[in-house]
Length: 327
Image 1 (cartoon, rainbow, N blue to C red):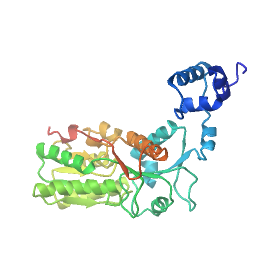
Image 2: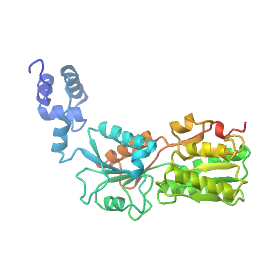
Image 3: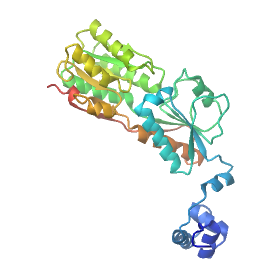
Image 4: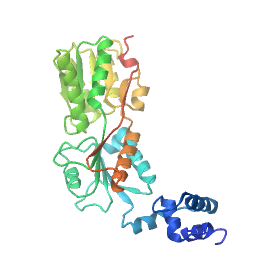
């Protein structure tokens, strides 16, 4: 092997004094290879700077070396979904796989498996992908017909309940919610968590529903109408990502100071919530980590390390900031 030529599996095997098959088994951790032989092969690979050929490995397994990813079309203007995508890509890269973003098309994609982020019941592409016969993992449950092979989910309803407890402890007695319908499992869980909390406290649930992909102007209009209709509202929880940051200035126009005259919170954290004036209490959904977890579960399913029907919980966290602390 010349000084500039990359090491191959054959050169690793020759250096370690084993067959090519034994070297391959040692590097992959499969087959019956003694600990001494495995250590010798790994040492040879490290000394030679051997890098496995991922493409060749996928060919041997009759694999495409690619997984498919679908997220709602709000991706282009959503910080949450961008972070989720990067998480899936990271998880795929850790397994020597590429990611194909699936946005449209009639044909079943040539991929080994699928990750569906927040799949919505009324999305025809999601319904088609769910019926494609490919191993599939969803971030949150699919509310339509069919069941994914694996689900990564979070305790959204419980965390919304914790947020409501915090608002109540901060003096709020007439909270309201703006939520993005119930087309996704996440939105339904936020809505359900709020309603359950109101029922436990003998309160009428004040809710205004907007489309999942509602633009900022439509969310602000919904907030203005809700506050005009029920001026007694003293806490407003915003479900749609980014909505709370745009509602802060609206409240000031209405003569209400966030954190003093009305408590303001978001169900989705972002840098915009952190930089708002005042900073806005939010639920950190940790989207990048959620994307990694989805990819990891899909690869565990592909490798037989997880069984169909597997569910894994992705932790989320309530972050309390000045918008819900009475000045």
